Image (cartoon, rainbow, N blue to C red; front, side, top):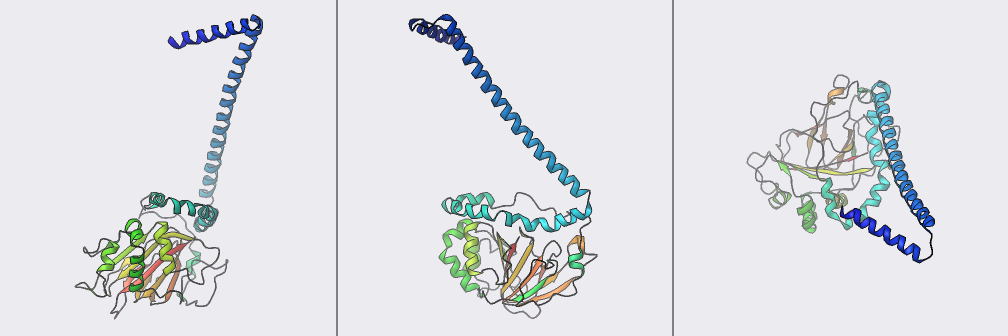
Length: 341
């Protein structure tokens, strides 16, 4: 009620001001009517703007639903989409990532938002009617040292290469950690291990396994780096292999595996991107190339001995490798896993 009285007071003041300045009552009424019309038009324009935005959103949603229905009802297109969609994600975001780097450098705490996966991987998930021809023709895991991949290469074929651009051992990893301990202790502190004495990367590097072996020589350590600052530091120690295609874009996520000679078998993780490179920098591990669940009927299983300065290239849409201890191995092994889209 008070607001209405205040409104009436303002209107009366305007009428008095108009009379004092020679403005007739008719002109005053016309001015009020024009003001009300402008207010009404602004409300109408605002409503039309909101409604237009709603129609655009509804249209995009309907088109997206139609595209997904088309993909699921057309098996051939569905298979092509599933096989290639991972390869289009990161290249399409290259410009965005380059723009984001200076922002992340200025506000490094923002990378905490990207530290953990938003979804839990479903171990029972299977792609219906997946096209497994890329791995069905594989008869062995060839050595392709010195060969450069082409855009028409069948990504379902795993292969190994000899690399000489990284000789990272435990000493160089320790030096890297000491030089950047403030970053690693904040952004990449945690590790996973079957040894209860190792819970952080600091534990692993202070009580190094080559000097402090466990009782059964079976300790396994997995160090996951998923933030930009530690990943960029590790990339200097372990750069991209020289044969990496220029159209591949490297993901932020990286893994470092440190295993004693008798460390048991374990499955290699499925990183963000499907094109995976596993690099051995010390020791040897036996890699069991097992076809993915969808392709087990069409593709064979292979064993690869991954020795120092060699890399294994594969695509996890078709292969789910397992790491096993190498026969007669007597030293710890260090393996580095990264992925590309």
